[in-house]
Image (tube, rainbow, N blue to C red):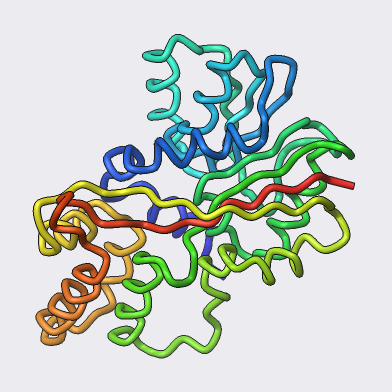
Length: 263
């Protein structure tokens, strides 16, 4: 299991604030799906730069944002100040061991954040624990057939074998896996599929952005043999091209939204 220091490094290097802007419509989708209202106490798990937390706070909800990375929380605070919602409670913490009591929140949300927590079973347990009975859980993950998992599979071909690697985070986008992980702790499962688009001039432009801004890929690329990098880059651009729409100058990124009621 990766250390907390390693996880913080992954999410600190690069430029997640730039990447996170692509996910704004997805964050709004999560808040809408959970029917967040002004009297709700809302938790944004792995909140990053605050997309969900700030969206929910602007609806009048009482909001807490949790992230393991201090730099992310600083960016989130700045975004909240700009949005005029400075009463959000920002907390540093791990999604697998959250610093909150049982049944604390009416609504617990995450936008492609909780899915990176390891072990995933602990993250699932924590989502349920901190949400009151009758409360709502809603989160998004990339679907297994989406572009980010496709790129991760290409990268894996160039990395040394790791028999101890955890389950891919993207299986949180598989409804059967979600059913298994949340189990009888929830009812009234609802699944929706959506798409966000990353604007770019070409597939090579997308790859340049990924390799320089995504901490997850930057750190993994450190383990790729220098001689193999040209082949990896060519393979990555080929994969990206499959998801790239030249009519829009955009790469489509498919995600699955899960919503459920805590029992």
